[in-house]
Image 1 (cartoon, helix red, strand yellow):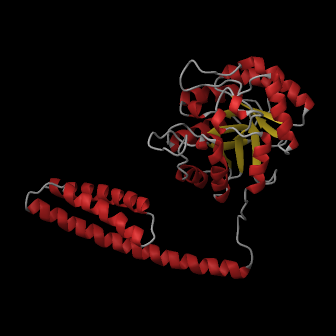
Image 2 (cartoon, rainbow, N blue to C red):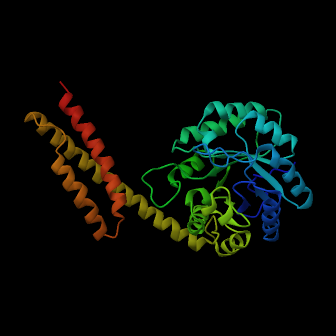
Image 3 (cartoon, rainbow, N blue to C red):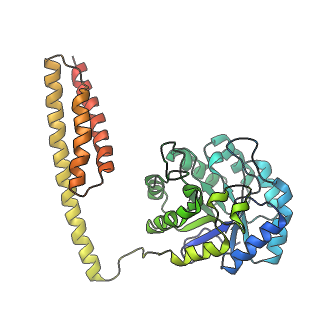
Length: 355
């Protein structure tokens, strides 16, 4: 079987779409028909739906698998479903499912991932692994390693965002730095973005999808339903096949590399200036830490506590204000100075506790 998740086997971006949950044969066929008309050839659909709380619709289970088989006989598509146990894998294989994905609630649990990995040994099937619900890069990497050790080499990862109670914009915070760090460690793996679960509302899906493409993601997995407002799960974030096509037509793809020697020379010149700016920045941080040590010694000499709350409040207020006047994101500066303050506290405490 030809590998699905090979970076040279498709025209970027790879698009996977389909309903959050398979509800009825009619809903599935109408949705797939609409997606095939838009050129989509890999369909996703929820068969088993682990929910945050009991009492809501949790998927039809094996009942939906024969419907998928009928769809595959009628339309030229491959079908992907989520699996969360060895029994799911067994049923899916018997039904001729083409692609499995491991969901965020499973990725967070090494026991579950290992059970799935054991059930996949000796099986030649593509697998997608979503990031864990909590922002833990090690758990994500661990899940990938377990599936790799099971012999699966047609593999992709899916960035679907992370639980964060402080985020009032997204359903799941994108925390883009985590998938970027993952790609740094596994550049050979296809990285797919799931804008539906990050957005939580359909109006935000195109924004997240474009951001992912701007960051050179390899593909998108998007929830699509023939009648989203009547969907049994995730109604607010699903797009009709027609709306999905409109969105895809408006998305902009970027070149991966600069073309031409002149552009490359200009890029190298700018990068050298960045290198110098970074060197100057590190020298400034070195001077700041020297002053922090001097303050620590002075506090020790006068038996004064490390934390001076009024001074910290002053810094927390003024530095973002200074940044805003310079056209720099004040939230970024507040975060940076928060880290600097933690290091200052650590260093001064070390000085005070030294005999």
